[in-house]
Length: 179
Ligand code: IMP
Ligand code: MG
Image (cartoon, rainbow, N blue to C red; front, side, top):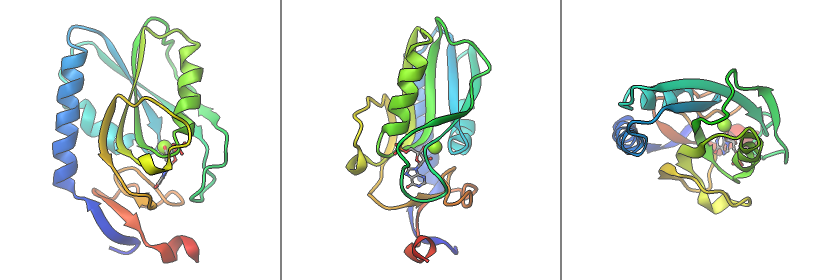
């Protein structure tokens, strides 16, 4: 596949992990209402897969879009709300779904912002985690896979808005972002 240096996590391995996370979430929220908040756009494939495996009766979804990236590979240092939630999260159990926690900056800012709105609980679920790059400490409640310090694409993750549609997670070829 052009653009991909190496496949890190194949489709089947992703499916198994998503199933495992969905089971944990189902257990943890049994009998409770849950609002899942997907962070656009990277969380879309993961969220769609996860949702359908969570066996809860009172489950609703919403989306937010924030940005800290400008089409490059380095965080710009602040976040901007591009699209806010449609619903009020006051008194709700909220689970944020993300594609990757890298420096932790985005999620820690987002968490602070959402905590002011008084949710009953606020947890975080990410399919990928890059612990070696963490600069802002953040508690992540559900983690799919730890990945190395490489530029990752696929399963929602992009480089310059491309590759989100890859059904697996791979490492981007260096020549693409160094050119
Ligand atoms: P953080 O604020 O550094 O944790 O970065 C969070 C956001 O940066 C993620 O939600 C991704 O959209 C993006 N990001 C971080 N690392 C990568 C990567 O390796 N590939 C693609 N996007 C990434
Ligand atoms: Mg993202």
